[in-house]
Length: 174
Image 1 (cartoon, rainbow, N blue to C red):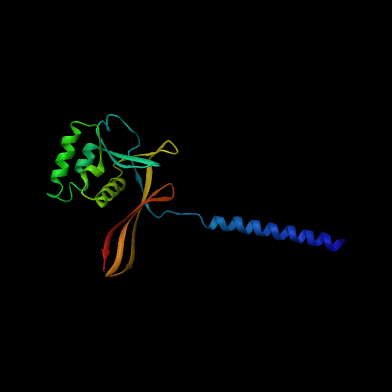
Image 2 (cartoon, rainbow, N blue to C red):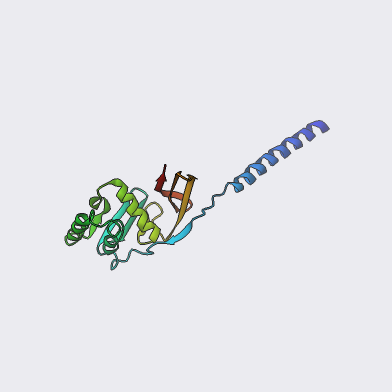
């Protein structure tokens, strides 16, 4: 009888040790962002967004920037000449519409991604979390570089609440 009680106690102890080890192991796997915080536009003020450009819109998030900020931002101020017609079209369309969409003024999908990244990095946009129904006031941007000289890539990772939202590759060397 004594041996049966002892086995039962040993089994309970082993199960307890396994549970503690499992829970303790989970604490080691916590995620830590190494990026810098970026404060976004903290509210959807109608005076700021009377004319706006939707930079991103899916089932989870809505990201927009004021029209003036869009016109003065990437790629319009970086690449002169090539985007002049698209910039002029955006200005003319804004005379008739209050809301514009970034993809209507970019020649490729890559341009829309880098325009979004530009505004996220600078905090010049407003972000709404559709699922939580809250404003996201801060994101994190982490700059990365991997590889060796003459065979590397570098870019940015944007995090929302400890999850990667967007990754860009800004440089590739071969």
